[in-house]
Image (spheres, rainbow, N blue to C red):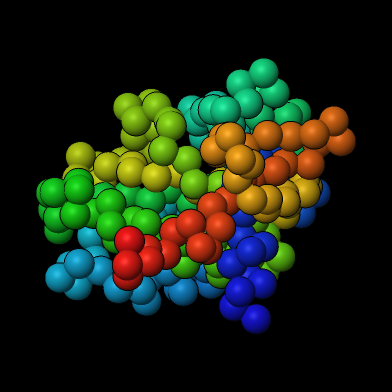
Length: 195
């Protein structure tokens, strides 16, 4: 069911390193992502895929994870992703980054839903070293990294909870490592016609 797929598609920060992701699986995931809507149908998003362990490790070094939990140094050793998809803005097609970000959001969510259907999970990352990543991937000037998506088989439990009465939206972990994500309730996000 779609609702179950959406609920299962969480931001995972720990993976089973034994579960490798094949190039075929990556292409299947991207084939789903390429079909989504695009502003003015310009389709300026390109993709760089990596499932080579050496390269994945180098990409990982250029990313920062779990800003609300800096004391945990995520991902923990032994729970690194086994693949990355780098979403790129082709500035020859669309030079306006703000316009491209809409396409990136739509495609990234679709990509992760497709991965979830395959028993995988991921994490959208916007906190990365732009210039070092561009150099590592040897990208031409017109292809600008705009989002990094880590992929792997989730090795952690993520649980959705209602935002507490104090309104704290920060995610947190308990002593067993379960990751809790506070979400607003449906009645809190739908505006009453009578205000």
